[in-house]
Every structure is written in C-alpha cells, then in structure tokens.
Image (cartoon, rainbow, N blue to C red):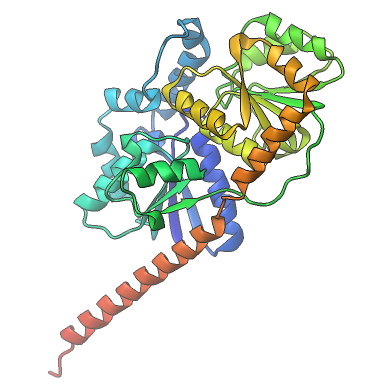
Length: 367
C-alpha cells in the first residue's frame, strides 16, 4: 500500500502528527509512506526562505506585538494570500505518481486534495487528521473519507455538523505510560518555533523551586536558547531543537507549554498534567476550552508561577488532572484506523481487478 502524508512546517504540530501516524502504521502494516511538505511541493526553490520568514515573524516580530493580536489561522492566510497555491499544488500532484491513499495533517492540503479528487474524478481515499481540538471550515471537505481526531470532544463536534460517526476515529497511542505520582521534573516547551517568554526574570524565577528539576526545549529559537543558557540557572537544563521528545516526555512529571493541539495530545499520551501559557492564536484559544472542559490542566496567567506554588502544595489537584488524562486516553482507538485502511485498500484492489476483467472480456476477439 502506497501512502502520501501531507504536512506543513508552519509550526511543529503537523510534522509531529504525521510522524506519529507513520510510526504506528509502519509497525502494523506493509506500506510505503512518502511525506510531502506542502510548501516545498509548490515552491521547491524558495520553501526554505518562506519558512525562514514565518519563523522570524513569530520569534521576533510577533512577541513585540500587543497580546490582543488575533491570528485567524496565520499559516493558511500566509500561504493563500501570497501564492497561487491551487494551481501549483495540482501541478505537483499531476506530475507525481498517485498513491493508494492520501493522508492530510494540514487543513489547506485537506481542502486542496478534496478539490483535486473531485476535479480529477479520483476514488483515492483521503484521511484528514485534525491536529487541533476544534476545527475551521478548511478541515471539513466533501472529498474526505475519514476524519482522525484526538478526542471524543472533537468527534462530537464533527457529528454536530453532520459528519457520520463511522467516518470518525479517535487516534492516539493507547499504551500505558509509567505511573507518575510525583511533581519533581517539569518540562517546558514552546513548540517547534520556541514561542516562549523573552523576559529573563521568568527563567530566573525557576530558582524559587530549587527542589524541582526543570528542562526547557527552545525548538528552533536559537537566540532565546543561547540567551537563557548563559543565565546558568542552577536547576535548569536547556535544549535547542529536539528531534525525538520521547525521553523528555518520559522524564517529566508536569508539562508547561503552549496549548497547541499536538502538545495537548502529547500530554494525554504521556500522563502529563498541563500548565499552559495564556493563548492568543485562535486555534489555541479553542484548545484552551478543551483543556478547561476536560480539566486536564491549568493556565499560567501573566507568566506567573503562583499556579505552580498551588499545584506543588496541593498534590490532589495534580492527581485529579492525571485521572482525567487517563480517561481521555481510554478513548483512543488506533486499531480502528488499521481496519478501515485494510478494508478501503481491499475494496480498491477488488474494483481494479473487476474493471480489468470486464475490459479484458469485452476487448477479447476470436478473429
């Protein structure tokens, strides 16, 4: 089975979702998976410059803007405003071998792949993996055959707008993690772009908790990584870009992070109660509603550590957050994805065989 997975590197969530899917599918199926970077596919010569511009904006210009700034889905606007994306993307698809199955981990590619299927009269199954806990219209498309969500919360929202239940699977690794009864090790992340506080006092205040161990992952934010590393904070270990976060997720007892979709998903999979930075991006504001409704985390308002004091002094609060994380993890049904894929692939092969047999019979001549 040949599968194309489509991602975009505006942030790390789409990549993380694709890697999780690929790892799970390859462990259970005989497949040939090709990951396609959307921006690289439409602008192969300048995609690095585009990503550099996006990263520079969010690391250096955005932090100087007022916190009331609202991004309606900045990555989508960025792409659609400046590039003739449909024509370029269709050209890429036309010039490359078609797979047996499409998987999209990015809203724009879900939208464009759906259009492509309709305009080219294709029956290739399209799976859309919604990488946040709410969704906007670009995620929902006529040509999508299956939706992967990360929670029943999102599944119910899809059903509320008329998506059939049998077209939705809650995906995630259901394996049990080690039981985390302490709150000794605290992991801080700002996503792939390293969107973290820039004020030195935030990091110096970590020394208030000398009985705790902190680790911060700065992603691709090299300037902030170097700035904080030079502070030589006693109970802090700093990291730049980390390709595999499994070790740190296993090490940590508590997770301070931005409320991105995959960050929340990681917290559920790894039994990590969340302390989240106040969001300002629209999708993260929606994700905050999910965290609060399911009671799996608390907000770090104004970058103040008062909430940490409260959690450390009230271990029952962390216990309740973890119980809710475990409840959400029980909803994961990754095996349903494998069954769906096997059925669709078998159906495609059967239709191909029947069409070939019919054409061969009709084309046979006794002369």
